Amino acid sequence: MKVKICAGARCTMNSSENLAAAVEDLQRDLNAYMEKHEDHLEEFEIEFVNCLDYCKEDHYNAPVVVVNDKPILGATPEVLMERLTDEVFADRFDD
Amino acid sequence: MKESYIDVLKVRRMAYEHIARIAYEDRPIDDIAKEVYDILPGEQATYRENIFRERAVMGERLRMALGLDARTADKTEAITDGINDVDVDTRIYNPPLVDVIKIACEACPENRVEVSNMCRACLAHPCVNVCPKNAITYTKNGSVIDQNKCIKCGKCVTACPYNAIVHTKRPCQEACGVKAIKSDEMGRADIDSDICVACGKCITACPFGAIADKSEIYQLVKALKSDRNVYAIVAPSFVGQFGKLTSPEQIFEAIRQLGFKDVVEVGLGADLTTLNEAHEYYNQVVPGKIPFMGTSCCYSWKLMIRKKFPEINDYVSESSTPMIYSGQTLRKRDPEGLIVFIGPCISKKLEALEDKVHSTIDFVITFEELMGMFLAKGIEPSEIEIDKEVMDASKTGRNYAVSGGVAQAVVNRLKEIDPDLKVDVENAEGLADCVKLAQLAKLGKKDGKLLEGMACVNGCIGGPGTVVSEMSTRKAVQQFSAKSDFESPYDNTNIPDEDKKGL
Image (cartoon, rainbow over all chains, first blue to last red; front, side, top):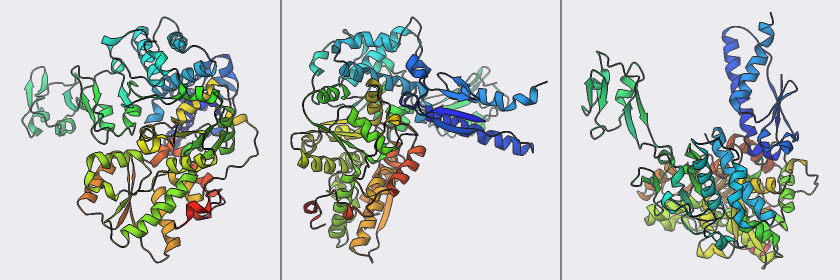
């Protein structure tokens, strides 16, 4: 699953790299959980991208993360991790 | 830890950006009164319990960012009080450099073991039975600790089956390696500036963002707007600080776009420090003229030894720091220019106030402050197109940013001088470790050694003025180091031959 993290100046200042660390942490936790249950999940794929211009509209939009083409504005680690766990488990609860 | 304090970082960095913006836009300095509302709009608080206190704290933060002292609640004149004195284009701040914003301090309890309301007043009450000081009384409402008797050993904490007893510590005090933080009469943190060595650890450790250092970005921007030539010297940990996709070359160009005439790596000065320290070690420690040698580049480490262990002060290398050598090199190229050190470090602001350094370094700012300036001027470093290469420093000079890098550079140089020489190195990272190392050195337990002291864990990449985590900078520094054309500092063609003479 693609996780695009903005590496522009304002997002970097507002700790966007810390969001990448949160995703890596979550990945480790999920991997450990999946290994224990002999299961497998789609892995996160972090990509740093140049400024997406959301911060030009409003400073409070930084940091920006895009998950499955949907942007999270003013992202925090807890919101991002919740979103990622929801997405990664989504197909299991389809019906 | 620092990286996860997101809101604390945000509040601090916003202050820098807004101060820089006032200066760049040539607005009256009095505008900080309006700026507080711009930074913290609306009627509801975002970061503290109410908007009034939040704005008051931001006001003091902005004043410190202008180089003024933070005020206490009994002296709340207008936020603009005395502000015109700092509306200049030269360095103006005075010690103390690091101080508590008293109106933001929550007076956290100092080192205490307390019984929480999770206590079930159990029949077994092991907390009472394990206490070596008989400090705990069992009552039907729960256990009670006599704070006068408690020695904070923590035995009751482990013994309680309900995790009902907690050992709380004051974060700023815990972070301070020289124990400079006491309490004032209201129980708030109070920094003893006679002991403090301005490492900045308390600034990043306080969960309320209640400790700050003074800044001079306002005056720097004014200097950049004057007709003088202003040069930036940038510490080796700069790589990777301004976004994952931003190259060192782009960072240099972004700095030029801020109004700097030119930018040079402090790694260049680091090369001179290496050459001088190796020379010094070879001529002083090897023949036994001095028992051991401490490295000279970390100012907090040097200051700690000067204040706490004056007996061994003479055994710290006399070589200048990379900041000073870089400044001197640039000063030769343009005697009239202004020189600005940009780094991860807060104590460099104090070093620059020293008599010998004052005329070499005109301003000191951190990477965080520089980031604020980029944003204030709307510069996006990652999108700059530039093909000009950065090549001021050798491989080992660029590695000064990482703990162990300084000593390694000196050892490598010593091997060039005398391939058979065995150099015994010991490193300390973090101020508390530095104190231990200095203590042992004083007792004669480190004789013959080269002692590298770094007040920040991981070295400069872990400095309080960094923007990103040391993990990511470490990689970036290694890659940048490998790209240098100069294996040894002696090969560095940017250093004039006269400066290498005899080394």
